[in-house]
Image (cartoon, rainbow over all chains, first blue to last red; front, side, top):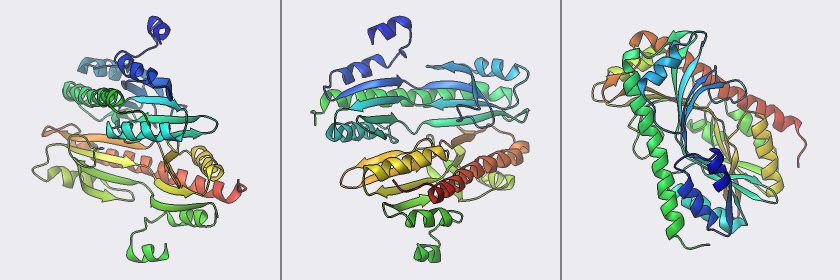
Length: 179
Length: 179
């Protein structure tokens, strides 16, 4: 983790949460994201193969960031996306898997579940924060420039909501006895 | 199922998919939704406790439906949402659970996972289609009326994409040998 931080792989804001996981003998994380605000080009913004991320930030944005991307010529379909934190956690056994899913849901990560059930139990911790706002569809601007500042405010508010859940989970991991 | 259809509980379009599930001895469905287009009032549109659905349809909409809701006075925050199909399926054992998750992901339900791992294995089949478009935020209209028809077209296209995945899963259930 320290190495990842050095290289810059680690999202700012997720470190203290990851530290709580490293203290648990029945769990370890394999990937993590504190949540992000992106601008995506494509018809289906959730589709990783078809859509293309043209702007990405693990933090808050300002209206002129949106403006700048929208003004780049050639983008037919452009979306502003906010996604909450996502973590993949390997659990030692069923008890640890159920324990962490329960805590995650309590913290607001309503979509937490077992992603893969093989030799390892991989738990996906995911919030319901998945907002895709169409900025431009078929070349037509849907939202006037004058609203970009409030759009940025909205995106920032939703992003902070995800970080808040991460902080709650951190606290729950600290306070809840092991399974 | 026939009884549910009689009462009108069953979404139109999901029946043929459910029939494929009923043919499998290792699986049964407990709840299902073919996907829907909703208009939701609230600050956090995904939050079932805080947000309130003011319009709901398991099918396509027209621009004037959006207009009608937006013109109702008193709504401070209004969102247009499109959510893809969601099914909960109980699997007899691990082999059936992994089998159905694999098929579901192939059909486009990328968020399929094990939702609960107790005496029963409950699998959640869910697509990545989760679009929330802010119509009105803090009383301010973000998208001009003139774009409501293309907004409805967009919502319909995303909704149909979900139905398409349901049809693919139907076919995969028919063609793939039991685990």
